[in-house]
Image 1: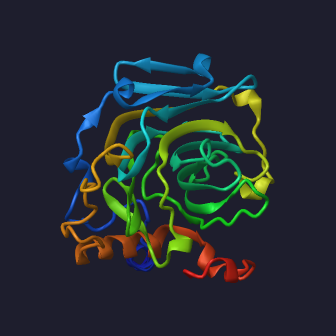
Image 2: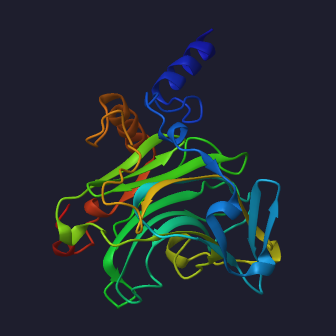
Length: 292
């Protein structure tokens, strides 16, 4: 009996992080945007021989010859951009599987970008989901990243989960299964991306930094490394749409922000699963990130 009571006490003090998910956000933006076929909204960008479409699921893979990437057919100035992703289990150190917005091809050296990146790992260690925002500052030698990193409350290799970016003139919100994990508000023109962007996905070798700051590299004896995508959702305003076009809302309020229930869910995620925040990094020069 004493052993049983001690076990209960340990469980109450140290609950399993896998035993419970986040509080309900109460609002589900993905349900407001219809699912599109890959060919309706995207095309291959590079590595066509490392990309295959099987019914509704796109697989892209990396081996020692090449990775692969895809790009939206249109560029957008705001919107909801989502997809469901299933990641590769096992040894994936050094490998990045991504879904993001960018205008790097239009503004090389000083582009904008909004990232969801899965940083590869080693067996029995969790993936890191990295969110990031660049504003006219990538590729010119003066990269100013705004990284916030998370572990997940589920195993992203066991099944498909929905990941999304909502970007409008006032805010950027990152979602996982409709749960907001990060909100990046527009505090000034200088710290917020405003130029049109395309939507991308890719898998590539980032051994120089992806896993433990580059300490553990990609190992091609485990190739191919595969990322699987389906349930593509784009609800946005293209550059050719009327100025009166309104993108989908990320919350019940049409004026933006998050509801109290959504904020509670986001706070739960950040309290339990956030592992890095650039604003709280003492080694960063915060004169370059005034929004902190």
